[in-house]
Length: 438
Ligand code: S3P
Image (cartoon, rainbow, N blue to C red; front, top):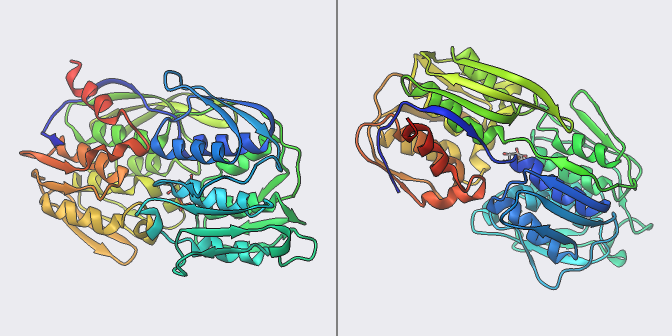
């Protein structure tokens, strides 16, 4: 797909539902008793993978393409049935890691796989703690990656009571997928299960599971869950995804004379690092109409073109903006001075190696950017020109460069641009509307 310099961006956009929250709503609805009705569900390929897997596990899910409401007929913690086939999570790390925790609590064997990218991503980070809990979970190729073989039937359990055992896990990484996986296994364990993270990662599991009726408490960087709750189906309204809003925030700030209103965006403090970073860089960004939407804070965001300055980004803010770093690194190309992004080595194990892919592509466009062990250094101010961009089938890379293209001289060609389907199927149409509607 070819993109050219364009702008200004004017007007209003409503981003689709949050990906992390949509996944969890399906999963927890399946484990609850009775009906869960999800509004503003994200119909991206990743969340559809979660729906497909839970259907294979015997859950009735009503999902009409014409509506953004999804209904789950939950069967309780022990209501899943053995699937006829291997479960395929597609490109979705959240599906793979969270469902693994749930499947370790089931009395049937199952195999989990996914696409080429997911089969390269590290699963040792969930295999190790799940094994400590007594689960029988193996990497089929013994390479700490999927396919994963899970067999927690009674004769395979290492605990004499046929149950998982609660653990106190000190996670080496700040990862909501790892944390959530262990907490979900904790629903099926004997005794308490707790996870301590080096920095706090997104807390949607904690917030939503407790609304369904689970006993969860958070103290500092430690989350603890009690087993065997009675979970009850409920209504869930999914806020707009701040990770999708990030592209319009950046575009509004970068392109001269732009002013964009982004409506109904989730601003959970474990996700709002991009807003803080933009403000620190000097952005004209305001939050209006701040409200609570079913336990998650939500706001409308107004951004106007701004002169930005480079800053240092690292430490505990990183998990709160981890998916926005590709976009932030492009923003830094238009800021005055140097931006240093550090403590972000997790970027190497996302849908692509996002440090290498950003540095390679931005270098092709003329940026002054260097990869480091745990991030990148960008010297802003060099004009960008069009180039051929390898998205590596990574949705966040494709969307970030569609925004960069608005500021680049000449054609920018994005290869496999359709991969935005993973989290934002209408992204290009929504972006275009902002520069064509005036
Ligand atoms: C997610 C957690 C993050 C994030 C991913 C979604 C989640 O991954 O990058 O897009 O829904 O829990 P990690 O937990 O691996 O950091």
